Image (cartoon, rainbow, N blue to C red; front, top):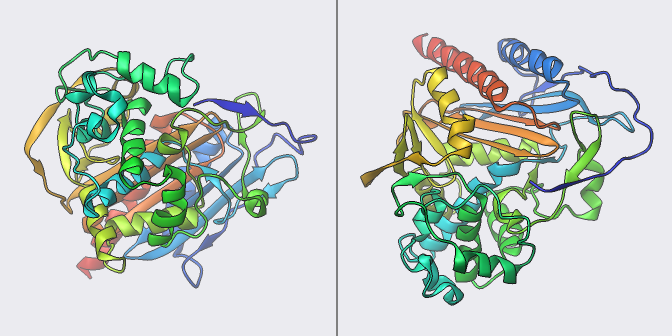
Length: 395
């Protein structure tokens, strides 16, 4: 992701501040959960020199928040559950929800060809590439990022018009911002409103998210954490082509765990939004042990750690992998682990949840640290929550 450096004043310290707070909705969280989260998070922060993290856990709809370290080293501002973090590619799960919502409203079908919603792509490869191909990274080999010489919408359209697939659509999965980014762009076109406006004016409020943004408003800038590079430089994400659709969301632990809860049980939401969320859990392709949904990636639960690591590996992110189409698509299931990682140059995020067990974890960090470390920590927390839920049910 393209980023720029912002260097506020003198850094107060380069030493991690390990303050931690745990809250349930109205009271202090169970000691057992606090111990589990501390055991998983503190070593990761120390090993990877992460300035600050906000962790949220949900168990049967009850939320617990655990806050560590600093949102800004320059003024020693501590992380809280209301600190805004960049969530990188977890933004794609919101994009997927918007596209699914557009289908619920009758603005599009996920099986429309891409050129139907952008006539400029007529007589190109996108006459044979569907919206679902774009949303599941199976369009035929679109790359991870746009080439550096694509810097505006005209150049973006020209790039797509000239692009030629490496594989037939629906045969290989290659993780790609230009792929799901175009999906989001076309979904917004079908709804006749700019993507960022749809997210901030329609989707976020419909999900009950009051502190989630594409563009952080001035009155919220004091809550916006700084990200940090390996050299300790303060950094925030820079605009880029289709950035809002692919890595542009900024949110808090409070809002992100609420989004997880909506994915676990959206029964309190508007029916169209409920159906849109459920549709993002439909499985379209299997790649190894991972099932690709809309934005989300899923595994049979209980899941082995090595399967989760393989599904979140560099090979999966950087290479074209053979994909098996699921015919018919796999209906949403409760006995799955649903997850997604997200990164910008200064932030690293991980979300995982098990709908059937009503457990989930959100991990927000203001440093882009190794994905295997995130997955291992998240898996440890979820596994401990599963054990606790099972133990409580046994009694």
